[in-house]
View 1 (cartoon, rainbow, N blue to C red):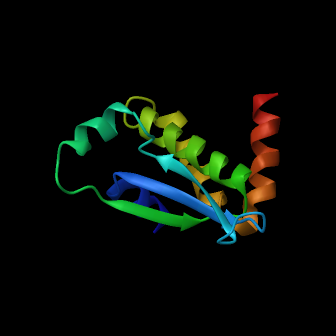
View 2: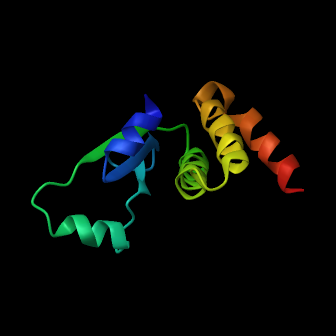
Length: 109
């Protein structure tokens, strides 16, 4: 469901609890960043789809964004890279967040 949300939306925001903010939440764009070529393209259209997903923290939002970029850029051209990114994607739900960060750190050396 999370992957479908990312794939279908032109822009995706990550929201996480932050008691220092007046509304109690902070946010970050995780897909369709401001000024990106994709957003300039859809800005010419009257309809832009926007979605929001809850994250544990800013780090979690960053990790989710990075893994999604890995999925988008590897695609059919690099099936092994796509499979690895997809496995990470399946683990980024909050219950597996710390384990996923640890796995990525080991792989990156």
